[in-house]
Image (cartoon, rainbow, N blue to C red):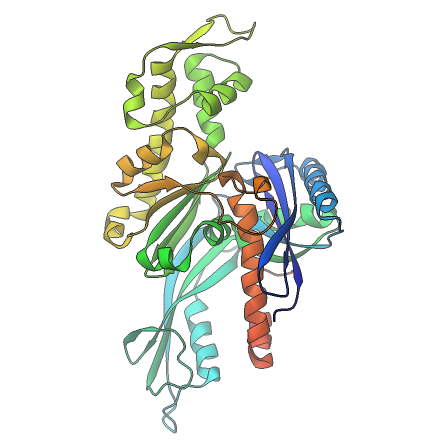
Length: 404
């Protein structure tokens, strides 16, 4: 039987702040018990630019979640995004001492440190070091090398790092709300926890989370993370294009984007028009063909940027599960068909995987990151419950973000 735990995920996005409270029950199942949401102010392209404003929004979201869960929270797992986040893969290796052949725990610690020992830009800090593979005497796919016989041990890690000050600004506004940050998670890592199962990761999958100000992506090959990153482009840019291209007020551009736009490849030939009931808009009616053309062009450009950043042609044959679209902007009509056209693979819009609790609160692409945070926290807690005291000390000493 598992011990009960409370996990809280906090996402500070460009358009919304979302807080999710979940409990791991004694049977090990995770149940959502509260969720709060508030419009976001003081965030630009996923990064905090006004701590005072976003702290107020954060308090609103947390208070709503606490009220629904009927409990007070003091600790959170926080998401972080922004174009300053970068990733790389690095491989390190060691030789096993000549007086023995069996690989021991100390060897694993040493090779992991070797793989993590990379140069990053001055002013950056490590955010994640995700194990991809171990190799014993060149043998690939080793899950746990301890106890194996070998002369050489290697490890490969996917490493994520970002600008220290930008990450610390996110943490500061959370602490201004009298909350302790237990862990910091890249948004795409959290979203992947919410929308993918292990079988899909093994087949290969690309998750693209399109928010208001950023697009986060993460690529899995053979069950492990191959690439990840963030583009400073999101749904707000689509709204802006509609506003400028069709000369409509921003609030109406957002409304018709959500309710009327269609970005499927064939929708640029749509007939008819729609009426804009706003006295400040002189035109009165908008041609659907023009609306769809403007919207499709921006979304196609966004998806093409992800494709180029990943050099996707090198990976496409290994992405057997296809493209998974999530985030609020993934609710655009026709976006799955457009993504399939851009990447040449099956694509679909996905919600967080079903969990216990009031499903109407969180089964939406908009909440994939927030739900993924509590799933990530649960996975970390289960790993801590299973490891030895020696391992726990190693993980504590290996934490990357200072001040947590």
